[in-house]
Image (cartoon, rainbow, N blue to C red; front, side, top):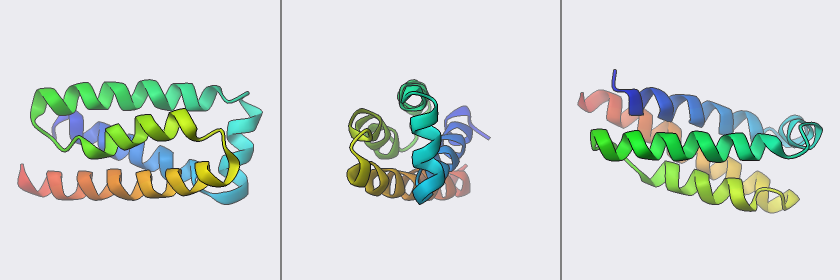
Length: 98
């Protein structure tokens, strides 16, 4: 498995966790919003490996945008949900092409 695909799975599952309505929001707030900074870095690393290994990049770019604007309560939830779906679908279809 490519590194980029593994990172797509990891970031996709992390975004799905953050999209759980009260649990994800509570986690972000309890970490003092540093969870969003960690996700920003993870998405940037995933994007780097996606460029290097010619894997899908849309999910990582959307994840970076999500990490920047996710501090807005309702908008953050929607973006985490969409980003998780895009990342997990990208990982699923990329894995089948290897």
